Image (cartoon, rainbow, N blue to C red; front, side, top):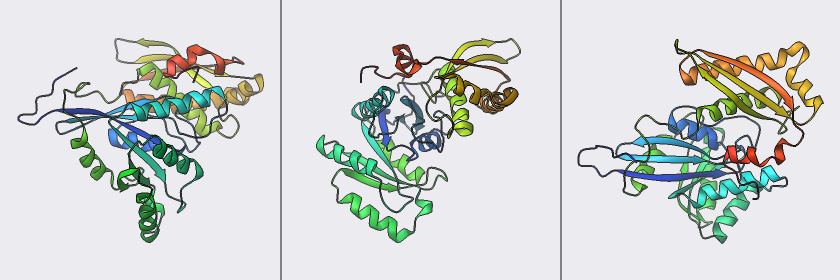
Length: 306
């Protein structure tokens, strides 16, 4: 742990669990709060598979946001592990933000189910109404009153994670809520995610963006090698695993055009994040039961037996 010199101010440090239904805007909010990309974002639901920590220093307070997978009714093993990780992130945190997509003027069934579980476990949360830029003010006030009546929220905020509206106020209010204590991370650190895993997540995001409808949740990406050179550049080799030969053909595309496009998009974003030249090589392999491999779950920080 590192002590932070802040004059006469008492240092504070704590964890804030960020939970919500899939596609509520959790990752967008965490990236906005941190000021950099630490969690992948896609219009497809269930893109976040593991708990991602985004670290924000606000005055004398260090706030560690834990972006969790979306909470929904899981059916497969991977889904169950993802949802278990989300609830664990809430249990371990000093404060919990429940991010709610209010763009349709009402809450979906998954968000309602999360509120009911919070009631049953007697866990208080901070309600965050997201995507307010898409709803009329009168409707927002009506929804806020209904949420307040649920009895699980200590406070309710209205924000747009995409535009940043309302986010600064949320940050200002969270900072003094953190318990007194030394900072757990250095001044410049913005995430606890290893670069190899972040690089794999960036490539997986590009697959989602380009092939989400054709290959929704049947692929994963692993960084096989990471070689740094004296000129500051880095050579990254990654493998995209799919379950069937037909999926491999989709990822490769005609004459390898699709995988080249995915690789180019991932390389550009990695260069922006890392601030250096990136040489990225992608390979596609079939591994029918990668989703049942305990080693994959360990890499993502998930419980295989959840």
